[in-house]
Image 1 (cartoon, one colour):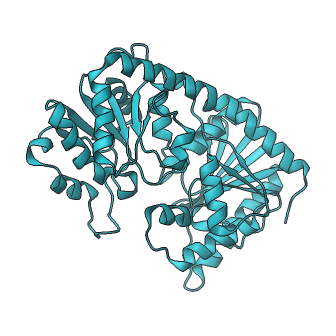
Image 2 (cartoon, rainbow, N blue to C red):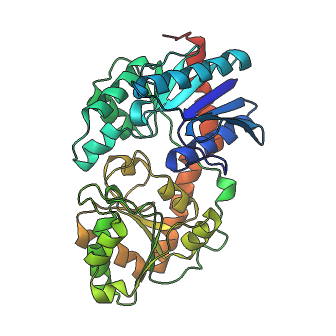
Image 3 (cartoon, helix red, strand yellow):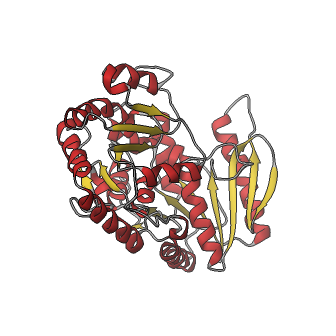
Length: 386
């Protein structure tokens, strides 16, 4: 099968930007290639026009163009025309794109178009209860109307997205994002730094990081020597218009608590894994995700996790079995679950073991690649080109 992905990000040194979407696409692309498929990645919004061979995965960097008028439309047509020329030449059979920003609005392709719900601006604005620009909603809605099929990483994300866009005409198939389990092994789960908490992810309001000062304060009332490490890039805060969420967090920590907080910024991925393995408990108090890849990665490394309890998280973790689920705004209960784990090593190890089994069962990228192939084959054979 010849499969292509259209994206603004991808995990490769020559690509300008890579985050969660880029990582999940690369995980899937590599797994699909191992199954004998030919994979093409179209990455738009780049500073150069170039074709890169990434161990057999062909990456097309599409140079960004600026237009004095109707840039939103002409930019899309430029991407469409480039993709279609490659699709025709390489005999690509199906194209997948994300819902974010509705990039495929007003595009027409020579093959079926699948939209994967990585999380639209509409979806995140709804979860964060913030106002959305009308044009963003319009672009995303138009993109869905042009698609032939949809994939959601969780049932929650699929149903909520379709509800927000009143997009009920085409079935949405749930296929989780996955990870290569061979890259996530913890040979000594019993070895960790006691009372060490770890958060990994962007410092941004929607990830619940502004709840951590209050949660950590409650934890230290019982366990004074508890420490908190934060790993991830800083970000602008929309609500306060601060250029740094980390600055806001610093002001929210009590002085004594802050002495036990360590912000390490962005780190190379191997270093991140090392810190996950060293953590006693991982905390992910997010308000807005479609799945939560770092949660799955920590589970694969047999970590005890206190996660959010909102929608999607209930499809990752069984509460009190493979982790704990607590609403991020419930600071006391969230802290109590952390303390329960810090006090009981056997519980930490038991939950970590069950977390790994959960990932092996549901988020193994090799199994997920086969599910995607079955789905793509069905869409291709349906001859759905609008």
